[in-house]
Image 1 (cartoon, rainbow, N blue to C red):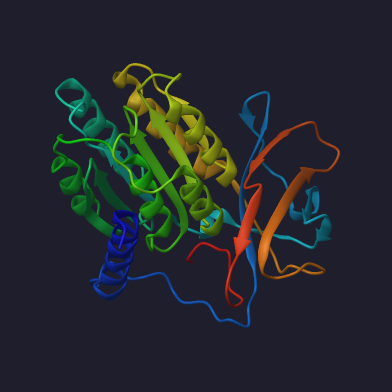
Image 2 (cartoon, one colour):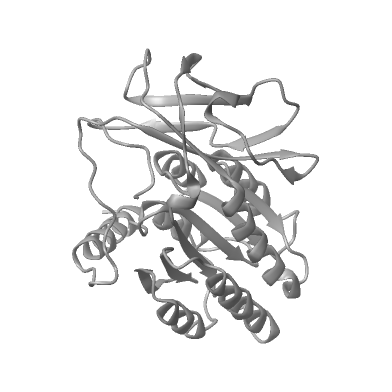
Length: 301
């Protein structure tokens, strides 16, 4: 057995253990019926860099593999968010950098609404789930305080697992912080990209490493493929501002849903969404992948 196969088995074992060991405050997302085949698309609409509010379902034109779909708009104020804080704690994250990362994490948790459920996953050359999905703010703050630097950086392995983890009930979003290059991952970038397309999670990236690093373009492309965004925060003292920008963006995004008509259910689907008669920028997931039996490509609600 290869070490890559061993890693996949380890990820699967962790996923299974998480699915079977949730406490009373850490409920797993509800299972969806196979008779319902729905797609949910989280999107961000801006004009000259500012969010556009007040759009209705009829303002959007949605096509799935070139076939127009009848989409409805979900009232996002009725749907919680389920963020996974995915923090690089390799050996370079020490001293002031760790202090600033913890401050940014605490500010993000303080900004969550009462119904939101967060989780904390730290990674170096090892992966440590410090807090499962929970609405308890104290548990998240305690997890952030337990962040300790050391070791190498298995970025692809951590991101792959993040896309596979069962997150909390709500609109799933992965908030990734990293300050360096991947130097020990066994999983490939292509495997991470495929996991991203099979997940309903948005990816937001905040990096403090070099924008010329090999990972920078990969993270930017992966984030944009999910409808999210990647920032280079530069100095680590800007982390809190970027983390709060992510929360603000989540509060102003739209959530569309439709039952696909006129397209094959399984396989890779190309999504296109426009706002009729408006010169705006629309950021959304460009593709999704359905494998196996019918299922919802959707957040837990």
